[in-house]
Image 1 (cartoon, rainbow, N blue to C red):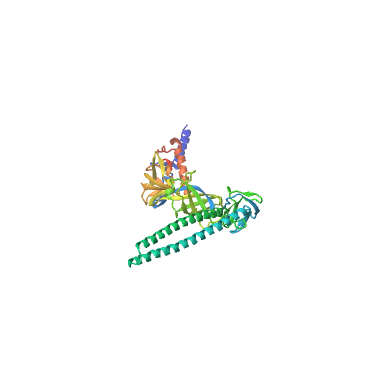
Image 2: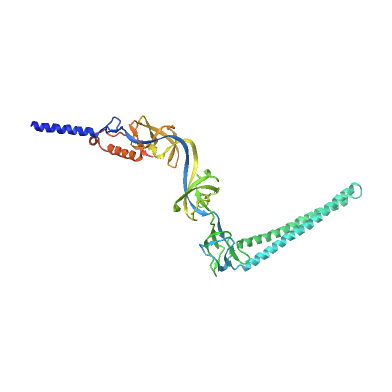
Length: 424
């Protein structure tokens, strides 16, 4: 019997020693095992002033800087085709030949008529100016003679009447001539529009060098005024076009900057705003913005999609903090700082958010030690210890979470305290 009691006492002493070696919780809820400092492991960074931008990202597309659309404003038969879609063409190169004989003849006739009307107007104007100059001199001479008694007032009145009649005749005649000249000019311009980018033999000429992306002319087929004969994309430079809302467009101006990312070629670059349209598209109600691509950017192809991020509402010399350090709970926001190895909860007000950081308008001051890792496991006044490595902090916070998830009876420690919140 005594032997059984001795064995029981020895087992109890061994169990007590083992529990003591395993560790305990301190008064603040941090774990201590006797081999190092107590408290929840956290990472911190010093609060500093900085600059923050509001970010607005929209989708756009890559387009050629120079795109030439060749139209012919009449229906015409195509007799020859010299290039096809996908070809690289040079400025001045013939793309196809159209049967525009009658149109060319009409253009030449209209141009001759216009030149003739211009010459007639100029000749008639010169004649009238000479006549009026002579009549003005006659009136002046008669007035001088009248002053010395060598001419009568009647002679002066007759000469002035002749002058007035000549001026009225000149004005009426030149007005009619000018109307005829303008009509002839309108005919020439209308036919010139039909023949834009077409030479005197009916060849459609490429206005610029680039890639022939569309070619609608087919030999022995017909081209129509409803569709372009060809479309050429310039090869030298690209641009980015986007459409933005009425809320964003007042914040953009020519000369501003934007970050552009083209996922198809895994390339990012900074572009300059070249133009901001002041009238919205009638269908989309959005405003078009054009950005110039730097000349050293290569590999872009027309039609590629791009993400364009505009930086607006700049705030300088303001306190900024990592967005993940700000915790939201019950409609309020707060952060944790470390003072004397103790977590201190501070309510904050926030402003702009962008690029992974948030503006803190009140609550934080430069120089404070802001908790950036482990804040979700903290409550106000809890003991903490600062670690430098991300892996160490993650391991310690996961261990702390596991300990808090266990019941007091299972862990041998105190029940977890209420507090914390969902990370913003």
